[in-house]
Length: 283
Image (cartoon, rainbow, N blue to C red; front, side, top):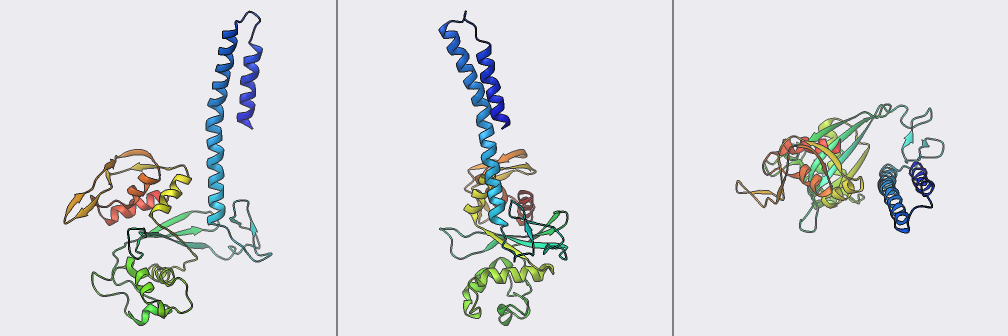
């Protein structure tokens, strides 16, 4: 509305400042200037409205809920409002598991290389992010999960048994989960809940291309880059190869492609640096 009123004032100004003494070319130039001024107002306004619409839709889709009648009021964004009859009334925190999968057309199986739990204060919305190292060994498996029959003392078989392999392990033993359509997701949720001692309320899983698409849908992310991060790189026999560019230190506005590399690159750093960067991007 503000943009429309602004453009109307531009057009009226152009009309009111015209005089009979102006030549045809001068009138045409005045019209062109008014048009360009209106375009300068309309373009960013249209983009802003589109971005807000995308974000509103994103929140509505990701956090949509279908509570039983009378149990919760729902805001226009699809997020339950905290009221006297709210299901959050007696729940001080909600813990959401965020999984980054390396699934892709050129990869076999699923490894959860990024694992975070967002613990959310239901009153204030304040959130803390817990990062789980992908190479965590001896991950405890709760007795309620069928994989505990294979590994009663936890997922322990040396360097081959890392927590990021739990999903594939459960998928390979799907016969132990006869009524579960997604034993991998169930098992990694159970194991991470056991590691942190936190009940997991909901889970969000996203793969590499989905992560980039999500960042682009949000209009990119602004990151204060703390260390130089390579793009397209990987480590082969101790040598970093395939580097196609760098994300330099300083405040950067990253699109989906660059945000993905900022969050997943570790050829020139290590897993813990990568985990810090992932929490930064998520924040």
